[in-house]
Length: 41
Image (tube, rainbow, N blue to C red; front, top):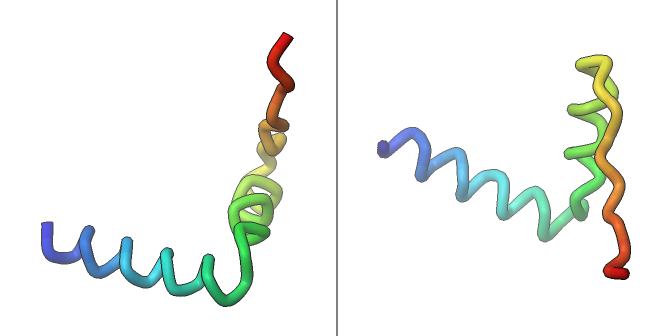
């Protein structure tokens, strides 16, 4: 559990500095399509 908490801390720090574009890169590098948000309605 300690490792998980440390990883979360790192993720939050990266998101503050660079935004969430890293998530899209992870999807793309694994050959997956990034899920787009859908509007309500």
